[in-house]
Structures are given as C-alpha cells and as structure tokens.
Length: 298
Image (cartoon, rainbow, N blue to C red; front, top):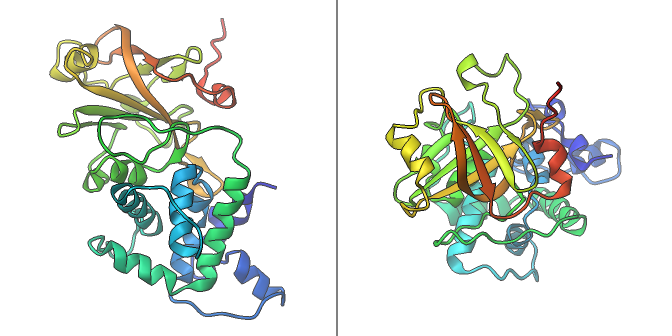
C-alpha cells in the first residue's frame, strides 16, 4: 500500500477530513485530541507525502522534532521553510488568501498542533527511510533548495526560485525570471483533452536518458525574443530548467513535478510552435524513463 493511499483527495477534503491519527481515534486506538490546524494540515498531507528531498526533509524535521539536525545554511533554511509554508497554505486555496509575511509565526502556529506535527514527522521520516534514489544539489549560481530528481509543486518551485508571487500568473507552464536569467518549464506528459486547450497540448517526451523533446507555446516563433533566447541561451548566459510529471492528477489531487535539472539547446524544428530538443546536464534515472518517454507507433 502506497502511503499516499491513506491521504487520497476524496478522504482529505471537506470538514470530515481525517488523517492517520484521527483514524486511530475513531478506531479507539488513541486518545482524542483537538488542534486548531488539524483540518488545514490534513488537507495537504498528500503533498507532504510527496516530499522526497533529503535536505528538505531534514530541515523540516529539525523544526518539529527536537534533536534533529539540519546542515542547511540560514538562507537555505528560510527558503525551505517558506516552501513548507506554501505547502500548508497553497496559493490555489479557495478560501481567504494566506498572509505569507510572517514565516516564523506560521512555523510557531504549526508547532501548536503537536499531534499533527508528529504525523508530519512520521511521514517525512518514513519517506527518508525509503528513498530509492540519490538526490543532489544543482548549481544555479545562487542559493536554491531544489534537488535533482525530487518532486515539487508549482508553488514550491517558485518559492525556491525566489518568486512565489508569480504562481497565479503562470498559466502555460513556461516562465522567464529576468533577475535570475533563467527559463523554467513545467510539463505534463500525458495530457487529457478536458484539462488542456488545443493550444497547450504540447508534445513533450524524453528521447533517451539525456535528450528531451519539448514543444513551445503556439505563439513562440524562432525569430521572437523568447525563441532566440531559447536557441542562444548559453551565449547569453541564461539557464534552462525542466520539470515534468506524468499526469495532471494523482490519488492526492494535483500531482507534483520531477525536477530534471538544467538543459542545453541542441536543435529545433518549426516555428510557432518550436519543437526543441534539449540535452539534460544529468541523465534521467531509469525509474523515470517510463514516465517521461513516448512510444511512437508506426
């Protein structure tokens, strides 16, 4: 049984949301408890189940579990706690927008829920004990807590890159961050017609462990500033980052993206849209090849 199965979207939405320790209470296996953020945290337990970066897990554990040590610098700690803050209070919440200005206050408010903190720590420790790949830092020339081949939501990615305010304005999976001098793409490989318009049904797939075929927005021509930046990004000192997921949804709701790292331009065909082949700096692990590949039937 996948740990995410316990926190399916069906089970964790609405006023009757129940996490593992709440189920233990209902089964008379635990004393009842009452905590102010139980419903809020229970609703995002599925997202917490997806956290699989070693240093991010250690940093969160160090906040809620006495005696746990994190090697993160102060800047890394702040960014990773902001990523967790946006996990607990995501920008797509249908209720009143959250005020993200008091990070330490939000961490303190979570700590006032000891049972939920224990459940968070149990999940993260379980993930840490069962990781089956080696994550690694990606040198972007600035502090960034994203680790190669780990899973992240759009909110978490934007926080890590220093632009959480861009979450609601990012519509079609591409974003250029001028101050960082980088483009990043978030791609859903298996798109359903009901979730995407014809202009966003892009053809994105891995060719092999190093090469990735990516289709730009339909309005991007090779002569445009954006197209030229893609083609000549190395000469311009610009970086390209790729994030992919197999499907838009998983059992816990909106699925996170796998960070494939930095990519370099190889070639392209067509214009409006451009079909670009990128060379990944680090190979795609075998466990992700099936997800990112595409079977071309003749």
